[in-house]
Length: 132
Length: 77
Image (cartoon, rainbow over all chains, first blue to last red; front, side, top):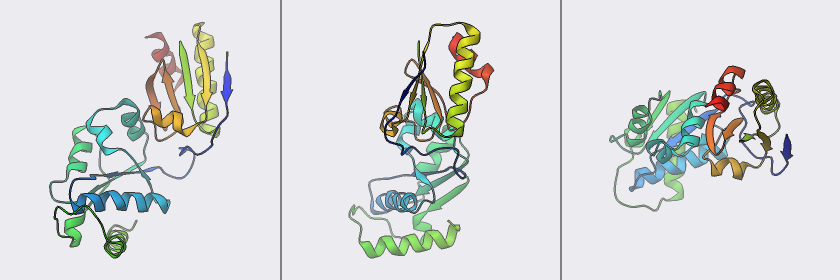
């Protein structure tokens, strides 16, 4: 018997405009953390939805099925190791846009805290270089 | 069997529910079809895009409306 459970209506629905999945490497460096932050900021701006990149590596069913349901995949990597892109491609997904922050001039180091000015600068570069 | 339709009540979610209910009826199986509109419940399954269909805890599809044949295939397994 059918039953409706009505609660919060905040799910990202595929009925809306093209669903853009944002996959950040979120790695253990300044550029990895910046990749994470850029995915957060783009999500806040409504330019895509941050997804769980690690869930792709872990082959988590809900995350894999959600990725199959995206219209466009953007991988955001901090450095040339391109872990996010590799993870997605190993799982059989096609990356439509690929951002590598070191290619936009950011120097990689082990710092994990980000300055507000750095975030603003990289957001401007990403939006400009990738027409996001 | 418990079949959950995860979605916000949009057109694709409603269509998905209709298809699932049709599949259940045509196969004559004893299944509880539940519509879940809570995003947190969806995210507990790792589902980040709706509609999604979950059968006995197993996510079958997300972000798309499944075909009737595909739903029947899932139920029959």
